[in-house]
Length: 285
Image (cartoon, rainbow, N blue to C red; front, side, top):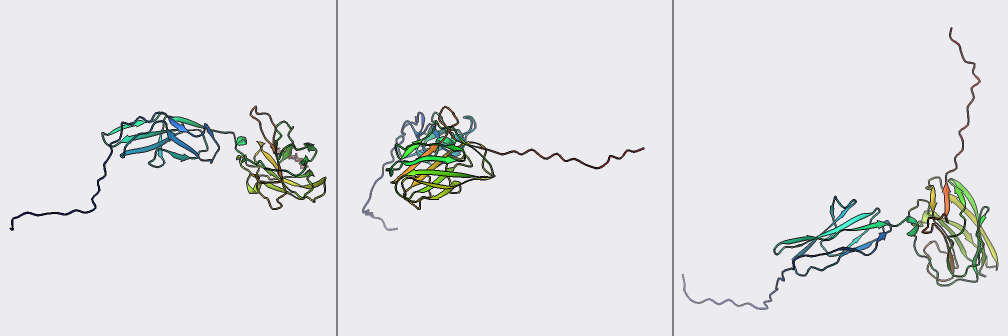
């Protein structure tokens, strides 16, 4: 073996300092909302930050605040959706030590579906917009004072499952307007494409009247639900969430006092016919 001195040369050497984390003290679990709408994302976070490079996060959810299930990613925040009231907490771990702490749980509730409809506030309106909305013998005459109006004090109409109902919109716009009526048949808090009733395109006379049909399917859920009238100068519009120009939107829905200011869907029940037999009863001897 050859003895002697050996030299090693290193080039472009960098050093990374591993910063030990502080003892976790996450505090309260925070939510960006108190109550959520089903399927709408919200954000969970922690009251206190845990500093350092060796921190891990395990998020948990629970239907009752007792039985917990792991979910989510290893991060200090989470984007979450839910369909029922749920408790949330996070287990924060510092692997140097190691030490672990759990945040104080938070319970996030669920809004009534009638509070979850999309915003529809047009930026402008022609003339007086829709001045009367008629379904059968029910009507709501009004002079629109703004592009969006919430008529929560109007007595509701009653429509039946598996029925076709005439709907008329009286307009004072001076332009042709597409007239759409949306009804939340499945009480989901959204106005879906299959819940749109197209009453047609009006002429440009001022005033003018446009009449179409509202179809209530047999599969519609009974009970209180939302209805929205959308009339727009955009002849091709098919959305209930209209926020562009030259339109008028009117909502009919339950207010916070649970007054019935909405369309009520009820199943029409017909009595079963009574069958009479003409056969002469046989007497056994």
